[in-house]
Structures are given as structure tokens and as C-alpha cells.
Image (cartoon, rainbow, N blue to C red):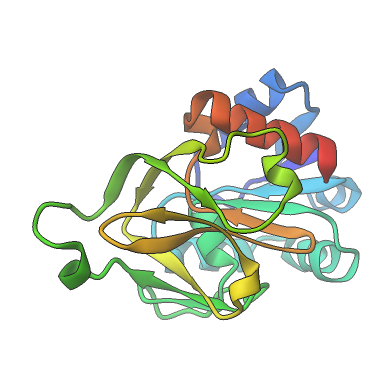
Length: 205
């Protein structure tokens, strides 16, 4: 059973539809018992960092979730804001993040982007895979995904960097360490590439 975590932030229904198309048994839930019994998790999210982290940490199931991820090493995939919440902090807000992986979230540097590109970064981008991962099993060398974001990850440990993309300059677009994965793009909006990523999460984690 895959739980799509409901903490009042995110496009949950579109993720569930994609997982169902991939053949997964997935439910949207904020029920502590269901979350305690789950095999793996998806942490979605859109919107501001402080709002997201405040909602998540105040959720009734939060301590259960942390135990499942940090102690029992259950797989979790953070999507968009969900990836950012995994970090220690964000320039977008003042509250600390989950700090499940060491890193910080920063705003795109306008001085490095130039005048021709806009913030937020919105649209399709190729990603470069930086290390072997089951999440990209049987996928082309440079898959394309759909992005909508003004902030991006900076890895403290370079070995956690999973994929990068380019918006004026190269930035971290995905991270992975053991059971914790995060992607800045939206797999549920990324057609066959997103479907393959979810299929791999279902099959290999």
C-alpha cells in the first residue's frame, strides 16, 4: 500500500490517478493507523515552504511518519514542495525543514539566470542523471519532466544528488539517499517519463 500524505497542501488527486494507472494500490490519507501500516509514501506539495512544513509537522500522524522513515527506513518520494521540505531550511521561509537529508533550498539567482529567463522556472526540461538509481530503471539517458518552481535544492553531500536540470545554470533537481528520494519536478504532469518513474518507485522500492 502506498500512502499519498494529506497535510492540506498539494495536488493529491492527480498523483493518485497516475499511481492507479501504474497498477498501484494507493490512497490519500491523514489517518495515523493507515500511515503506520503503509509500505511506502509519497510526500506531495505545492505552495510556500513555511505553510507546508507547519501543516506537516502539526499533522496527527507526523511522529509516526518520522519513525517509519528514519527508523524503519520505509521508502518515501517527495515531489516538488515535498522534496524541498526534506531539506534543513529554505530561503522562502523562516521555519526549519525536516532535515531528513542535509541541504538547503534557495531561490534561483537572477544574476546568474539573466534577463531572458523568468522566475518561476515553468515548463519541460531535460534532466541529467548523476548516479545509478532504481528510480530511473529502463529510462532514457536524458528524460524530460515538467517543472514549476522558484526555489531549488543545494546539496550538502554531493553524493545525495540524483539528477540536475538547467535554468540559466545547473541546479539539483532530485536527491536520493537510501530510502529517501525527492524530485523537484511533477511526475504526475510528465506523461510517459513520469509514469515510468512512478512505476519504478512501485516496483523497486
